[in-house]
Image (cartoon, rainbow, N blue to C red; front, side, top):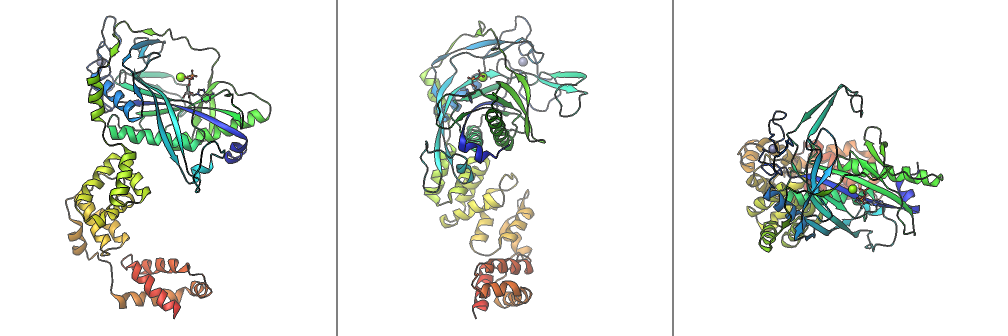
Length: 502
Ligand code: ADP
Ligand code: MG
Ligand code: ZN
């Protein structure tokens, strides 16, 4: 197969995503009072409603509807004042009622959009001029959202006895109804995405927004956020859409990107050899880096959708919508801009921190405890030393930043300090003193290290004198190593330059 960059010169990829998110942070299920939980005994949280017993009547979860309206507001959707639940019929043991309660043509929220900022390598994937690119190649792609609707999740099936990782071949299937009836929101995009990188960025951005809203734990790994990718190709310059295939099992950002990239190249090969793309559902196999057919779509499924007579239509009041709007916190894009303008953070650091609510609160609390001039160093510590960790307190992060900003410790020492204070209430400044973790500014000691290093680096010395001044970076690295990370890199740089220029 030809590489993606080459394929995308001739073909335009058309991508649309369908993203399911379980509202895991709620207490109870969508239509009954059963507890939502991840790790209880199988079938511990069930009742006549979520087991689909005849005559059991559903009662909608108001908090779930608040969550979906917040999700809609945060993605620039219109809140539909009247919508209703439908029954979507199918037979499968994971849904005892034999229908899923979902929404019909009108969803709670519709017609939104998210703007993607694409830069770096990702920007190179989109070759055409339809979108205006900045001089550095970066661009903004507006992606329309068709709708976000509410539905309920099915039970979990465990298939036993089959060969591992294979579909089919199981000898026994067990059903756990704990998940059945979990509130689920499904977002459907318009087919506006054009590259695997854009698809990945969209999913990342959505995850950051939902995390910030606090409506889900958004774990791709544990399946609380799941994505299906639809993709087709058309010749550059043509308008008509081609036949799409639908990709399943995209349970990481990497899988989402790689599966789409593979599928684009596969479809190009089929089309270039005179074949046709079939409308099929394909399964991504990460270990073999390919997609395989799960099923071919022959006729439209007939789900016999009709309004659920047990659930009356929803007329959302202004008051309800305004209450939801008031509960939408500052979103990642706004946070990022504020970090850059108020504190002068580097855009990259600002975006990383603003995208993870736990890191944003750690950063903001630590920033309160230092001088304004030291705030960018707090960001540096959060992004490069403690990102994703939950075992550090804001005042410890502030302490680390102060030590680094004052040139009292090196980055290697800061790393060591993180391990010493994490999970305790120890103070980094005191700990640094107790352990003698202070960066050495003893000029004579450092000059001695410089001499030793220069003696073993004849090559680099010659290169430097021949005009390649960049090797000094390598030499600083050698000196840092020789000082076991305790020397001051700026001093090493000065001393080395002095010696080499003399
Ligand atoms: P289906 O009826 O097969 O589920 P939908 O019209 O509901 O198809 O669309 C599902 C998803 O596929 C949406 O995200 C949509 O943007 C996308 N999509 C629709 N047509 C195409 C196409 N020709 N190529 C790529 N994606 C498409
Ligand atoms: Mg569909
Ligand atoms: Zn129940």
